[in-house]
Image (cartoon, rainbow, N blue to C red; front, side):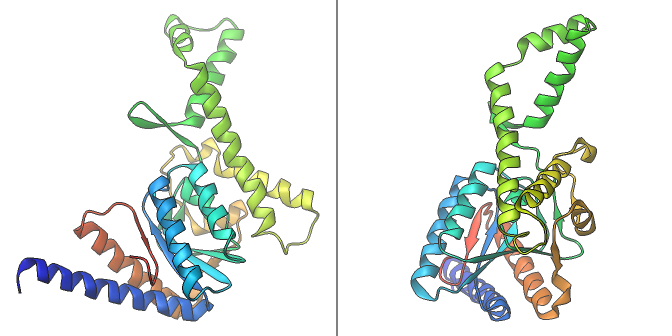
Length: 280
């Protein structure tokens, strides 16, 4: 067997094993399953749409389970993914085997349920905006502007600070404000509509609770955009989280699936990946 045939054989075996783990999860929830591993960007959104349509045309269930692992991306894309899924499915559960940071955290809040293991993490929701050749923190830019502006009103600016204030891009400042507002708006919309829909309390009370959660996830207390917030921290903030290990079969299938897929993506240098039984 030459190297090309060997690679194809390994590829087929890996896909078959990954599919088996997904089938195990499907049987637990009586659902369809897709996995999203990678950046929450336009490439992923397009792949999610294709995977959803294939599921919808074959063996569509009432529930979609999304196995999610991401360092983040764009809140706008999170919104598009939720809209795509909600157009086809009545219930949406997110399973976080390891981490779902930033826009991934926002995305997960669009679900009816979030399942996390004891090592799983969500993250702060400080919007990241692409500027030049890198992503910049919207909250970092806004906070620095506010601090300099306050010092300017008091007449306490140093020469260096005055120069920095003059160099700030007002159009980028506006973009940062809108990104922050979008993040909060999405959470205020989704949590009352899905995760908190059966909770006691008025619609206004649920919106207020969601707004408080958004504020806590966007707080400066985390000190770093990449700070990983544990399951217990997330629960204390106010999200309703189900423990993966409460169902041993689910825990085993999710862990085996995530470990195998991690290895596959690393070996093949694949950064963004969407998988379902009929989409690979």
